[in-house]
Length: 328
Image (cartoon, rainbow, N blue to C red; front, side):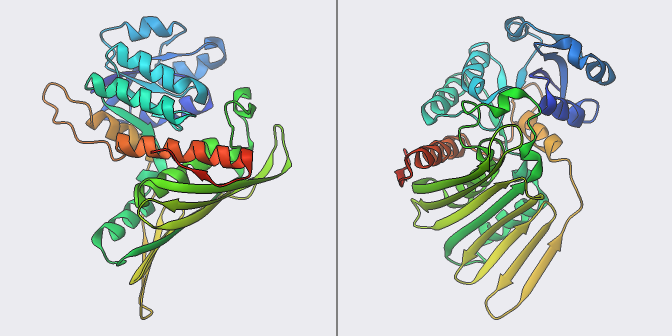
């Protein structure tokens, strides 16, 4: 059982704690770090989770093996580095960083010390996406030609903490904390991107925003794709991979459809899972230790870096209204 500290105990940190505490057989939280313990006292008590405000003391605690970051986006890279320097394995909520250079520094800090680094992209653990990747890996699609994606999420208009409304913390609007899942899915399927063009159409800003982001991508592999992220519209997820023999489409969390040349169609439906617990369990399984043989986290550090390179390039394209070359 990995003993971890939870840094950040706001809305999402509480969701993580509820998914794991007393339910995971691989990881348990020994403490939560928060600046406002009085505001979360009842939640912490219900979970049997002590609260402290001194992050440095937690990092210095030899009993703590790992930290889980559920903090504002702009803090992630430096907090990863600080945790690595303290010898702690790190699970960081997405995005890993807001800038590619910062992501690379964070990745290197963990790599230099032989520490596990994981990023919280829980859509990777949805049964629909697991099946989609299985179909792609099987070669059943033939040559991969094109990717499409869409993510609408009405909950992305709700700022459960004021910092989420900051242009510093969310430079790409709803894409930063929500549409980043599509970015990760595309990089995991097609590899590093070469060039991107993006545009945001916004009709209302502030605490109840209305914006839609459209993104066109060319990948180093030659594959092309596009996706859209829409805030305020009802929850809808679609990732579609097109080959010259078939296509495979993930619809929401629990449905995958394969359409073959000639008209044959296969539909797969899956029971619901707790994707937060699955990703934290996968992180715990990646940590070596006494009697533990580590298993690689499903998202490689190379993919983590490539995802932030694409994300930052999307932001630059939005700002300049021009196509942007993606750094490698």
